[in-house]
Length: 441
Ligand code: GDP
Ligand code: MG
Image 1 (cartoon, rainbow, N blue to C red):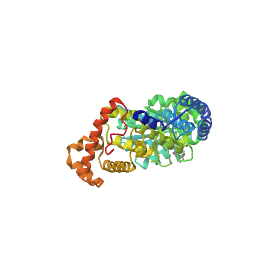
Image 2 (image 1 turned 60 degrees about the vertical axis):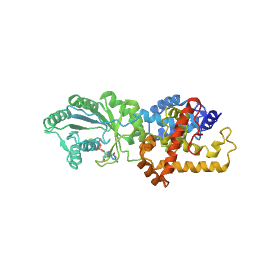
Image 3 (image 1 turned 90 degrees about the vertical axis):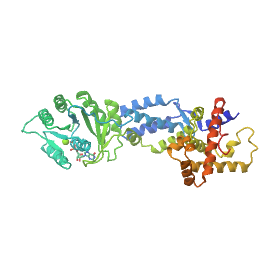
Image 4 (image 1 turned 30 degrees about the horizontal axis):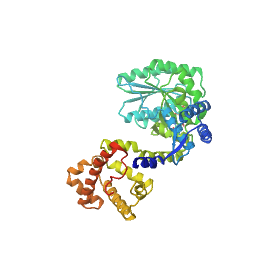
């Protein structure tokens, strides 16, 4: 019967294999190595691999792809998911000024990121105040002023010598309120190592400034250490997100995964250079492929899966029943035919059609080419709603011109298409639609 033969043909596109414990051993090692090379912390790698393995086992593998490759695709998806799927925007306060507190080790890029974020917010029409609360290095104030001056960003610094960072923060907040600033970014001092005095200073600044964001600035080059760093800052100060800097270097960015896994908080931005403009929103998808570094495999799997989706006969059948089968679906089905071999080969699957001669098949193929070129001259609306063409001769005229045929050819194809839709709708109540009702066949 046609329906089961067609189903077999589609099934041929799906492989038989499923991911199992045994068929992904090599891929598992490869993924582990990739994550460690990307400087994801060992403990995070272990936990991640165990989780993703459990999830992947039993997943179906499509033809043209081996279980290991499919596993890598699952890993990539999981990486994206863990890192938040989408970009997580800055948490902005609608009523009072938005306060952003920068935290992190010395040299991580806090002062630079303060300037960068200032520019980012200024470009969103915010009135921005940068606050220099690093009292230990006089040069830090100068550094912030230099950055800010490039885009006329105002910098607030201590009015008196010996001010404590939390006092500066407090004064800055008052100043911002009195002068209608709506974004305040507080740059703080870091140490070379995590220490208690740095943490308690951060806590005090946090208490007086009540920030909407506490962003941990992490140098992506510190690699595995990102895990401990995040843990300390999150436990002692409490962060709301992170900025990963120096991604313009060779670092593969594994710190992103460690930060997210350990704090549960999103990376919001990445730093990609020393210049004040070099800030970008963080995109989990891009970071996942950077960390994994297996773009070729991912492309291959994606391609193979698209083809199977195209062939999803069930979805097509539903469309036919609801008479929403349109020219886009038609094109998909044609691509499927091409992938499964020739039209002739397909027709010969149909019972009673094996005596059809090659001349007739050639005619059918020519007819399909003709339709394809007409469809490519249609607008999106026309492809989705062939009815609009029936109503308006001028549209049919335009398509004829665009595809190099005559208006009467277009009329004929449309009439056939409508007839086919009706015919298929009837048929689909019983069995599989198949290709038998296509125009020209
Ligand atoms: P802080 O001590 O945390 O305030 O760090 P700084 O903002 O002073 O940055 C330390 C050094 O890293 C400076 O030389 C910056 O120019 C540099 N830097 C900061 N962010 C980036 C970045 O995204 N890429 C590169 N290449 N350098 C950066
Ligand atoms: Mg600094």
